[in-house]
Every structure is written in structure tokens, then in C-alpha cells.
Amino acid sequence: MSRRKTERLLNLVVCLLATRRHLTAEQIRRAVPGYPDSDEAFKRMFERDKEELRELGVPLEVGSDEGGGEAGYRIPPRDYELPELHLTPDETAVLGLAARVWQRASLAEAASGALLKLRAAGVDASATDSLGIEPTVDTEEPAFPALWEAVKDGHPVAFDYQGVGRTSMTRRHVEPWGVVSRRGRWYMVGFDTDRSDTRVFRLSRIAGEVTADGPAGSVTVPEGVDIRKIAFDRIEAPAESRTATVLLRSGAAQGLRRWATGVRPAGEAWDGDAWGEATLTFGEADRFAPYLARFGGDVVVLDPPDLRDAVIQHLKSVVAVNDR
Image (cartoon, rainbow, N blue to C red; front, side, top):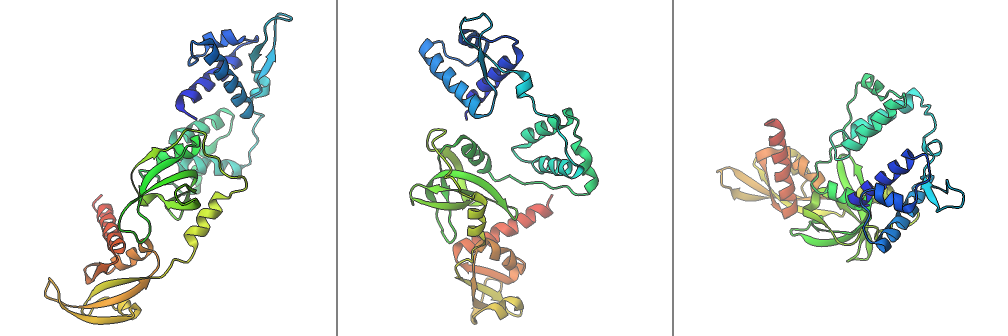
């Protein structure tokens, strides 16, 4: 749903809640900003808005205050208000933690608003302070805001993506179904229209801008699809074995030497030390890279390029953290 439409529907709900009498369509048109001047365009838009409110569960009442006059609309406050909330201490704690989890994310404003409404209803979610934990969800991935909006609005997206084992980017066109987090990493599940199949994309592998690739409302998640199960099954599936070629400094990296299928003399390298060339098997580059990085300057990755890049990125992140 676009921001303009959201604002118009909110204004419409506020207007119909605030009135004690039924408002005609023309009165609503004059009172609610965002409606077009054309009679036909207004009629079509207003009909869609009424249907949208009903689908959202808003109790739109139709009636007349003049006995047979033109029909009008209002929302009875008693039918719209939420019932009194009765939450257990544990339920309150969970709600508070859920809101605080998003405090650094793009949903922080919505989470804060939810806590404010809870407090207004007499529910104190600040009790989670006594739990001694401070959970957060880091959504600093550049692609996250655009993909979250795409899932919410139901529109296709296009982006450049570097798959596992690939050295170059490919353009992907996807109907996004959901965004999930697993072990600190973010994934998007959707239907890849170029491959006509369901795919799971890791957000950190998306490069550049995520752009809209179709109208809002054109993406529908198939009934019965479990997005989390699709993502987790794909993520946790055993990775296909791959081969890496690395240089090992003489007398160092004993753990890798025991792992290697063979170590061959590689002569003297740039630093004058003796090196050996080893062959290692691994699954996923992003998971193997932190282990290789532990050996620091005693290991140099020659191949494949994506593993070498992953080790470099990991070392850069360690340096960045220590420099803070």
C-alpha cells in the first residue's frame, strides 16, 4: 500500500470516527484530503476505499439520519475500540522485548508507537528492564528497507545478486514473499520469475539498489506457503563440497595442514619465508572464511575468488570493530 493511500485511509477512518451523524459521500469528499476532483474518479476511489476498510475489519456503518435521505457513513466508536487488555506478566515482557528488538531497525517508529498504545491501555511493558538482557535485531543491510516495503506493498523487485561461488553479479527479478532472520543473517524468500522457481536470497549478497519491478498489489503469496520453513530448510541444507587452494606459511597453521588433502612445497613467497600450497574442501564461503581468518598472515587464499573475498571482508570487519 502506497504512503498516499495509507494517509487517505487513515484520514477517512479519523473522519468517520469523529462524526456523530452519517456523512454522505460528498461530505466525505470535502472533508478528507486526497480525493480527486473528478466525480467519476472520486466514486471509483471511494468505493475501493470502503472495500479496503471492510477487508481490514473496520466496522463501516451505512445509514441515514434524515429518514429516507441520502445514505451516509460512519464508524461507531464502540464497535471500533479494542476490548480491555488483560496480559500476564510474561506476555507483557514478551511484547516489550519484541518492541525493543527493533529499536535500531527501520521499524523502530512503529514499535515505539505500539508501546505507547500499550501504556495508554494501562499495560506497562517497561518491566522487561529487569530481565538483564538487551536484544536487538540489526537490519543495517542496505537492501532491507526496500525489500520490506516490497513485501508489505506486494510489488516485484529487481536487483543485482552474487550467488554462492559466483565471481560476478547477475540481475534477478523476484516476487518477494517475506524477509526472515536466521543466526544474525537476513534472507528474502520469493519467486524468481526468470527461473520460474522459489528462491532464497541472502541480503548481504545483494549489490546496489533494489528497484520496483511491477505495480503494488501484483504479488500474492501462495496459500499454505511457510516462508520461514522454506528459508531455514534452504539455509541449513548441507552445502555442496567445494575445493580451495591456499598457501600455508612453513611451520604454521597446523590445524589446516591436518585438514588438507595434501601440502606441496610452494617455494619462497614475497616475504622470504617458505610456503606450502594446500588443497582444502569446504561448503559455504561465508562460514569457512572466519575460520581461515583466525590464522592471520599465515594463510593466503588463492582460489576460489569468493572465498578470498569473504576472508578479506571478515578481516576488515574485525579491524573496523577494534577501531571503534
